[in-house]
Image (tube, rainbow, N blue to C red):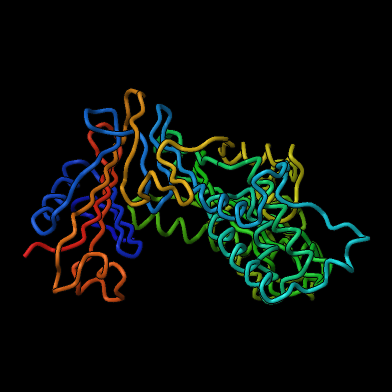
Length: 425
C-alpha cells in the first residue's frame, strides 16, 4: 500500500496491477501523467454516459448499486472443481461440511493413489484461493488443505462435499453499504476457537472476522500450532491472533489518515478474564507469550468485550455449523447468497467470450456515488518483445509492462482500471 498525502491518493499494488483511491481532481492528475507515458483505452463504471455498473478487478466482480458497493469471488473456481469431480448433475447440499461418522473412520484413513492425490491437491488449492472471498467455506477448505501431504479417502469425501455445497450456493456477495465517517473509527473483530476440534491430533482451530461498521474486511480459519490444555487457553490463542489482526488494520488506517481504535469480541468469559488480569496467576499452563494482550487492554489500545456464542460470526470459521447458524453469521457480516451468474462473470472455457476482452453489459440503475473503468492497450513491440511475451517475462519492469487502477468515491470521483502493455517510444 502506498499513500500520497499531498494528492490524497492511496494505492494498492498487486503484481502489475495498481488500484488508487482519491478525489477526482487528484486522480485526474495521476491519470494525465500516465497518459503522457502509456497508450491506454478506458472504461468507466457509473451512471453517466458510456459507463457500466459492473466490472472485474483481478477477476473478482465489483458492482455499484444504489446502496453501495458489492464484491464477489470469481465463480469459475467453484465450477472448475465441480466439473473435474463430475458433479454437474449432482444434488447440492446446504452446508459445506459435516461431522465424520464413527463407522467410517477406519475406511476414511486409507490413502489415495498418486494420481488421485495430485487431483486432490490441485482442487484443494483452487478452493483455498476461492475461500479468501467465501467466509462460508473457510473452515471446510482449511480442513482439506491439512491433508495436502497425505490425501485420504476421507479428504476426498470432504472435497466432494464442498463441491456439492457450491452447487447449491454458487455465489456469495459481500455488501459494502454507504456509511458515515463515525462508523469508520471502530475496527470490530470477532474471535472464536474450537477446543481440541481435531480428533486425530487434539489441536484446536482459531477463527476470526474483522469488520468496520457493516463492512466485512477479512476472515480466517487456522489450526493452532500447539495442543492446548484447556478451552480457555485455546480461546486465548485465538484472541491473540484476532488482536494482532486488529492492531494491523488500525495501523493501516492511521497511514491513511483515519484515527481509529480496535474492539475485539469473544464468547469465552475465561479468556476475557485473563486479558483483564496481570500475569498468569494460578494458570501455570498458559504460555507467557500469550499475555501481551493484557498490556493492550491496560493501555486502552484494544477493548475486549463479550459476545454471545450464537451471535459470534467467527464460530463458522472454527467448525461445521448448520444452515440456520450459517444464515445468522452471514447476515451479521453483511453477506448475501445468490444464484445465477454476475453480468460480467466469466465462464469456464467459453469460446464465445474472450476472458481478457473486458466485455461487459450495461445495467439500468441510476444515481451512483462511485465510477470505475478498465483500460487495455493494443499489442505493440517493446524492446523486440511482443506484449504477450512481455507479460510472461519475469522482469516486467524492463519490458515496459504496466497495469494501473484508479478508485475514488463520492459524486466527484471516478474509478479506473488501466492495463497498459507497452511504453510509448
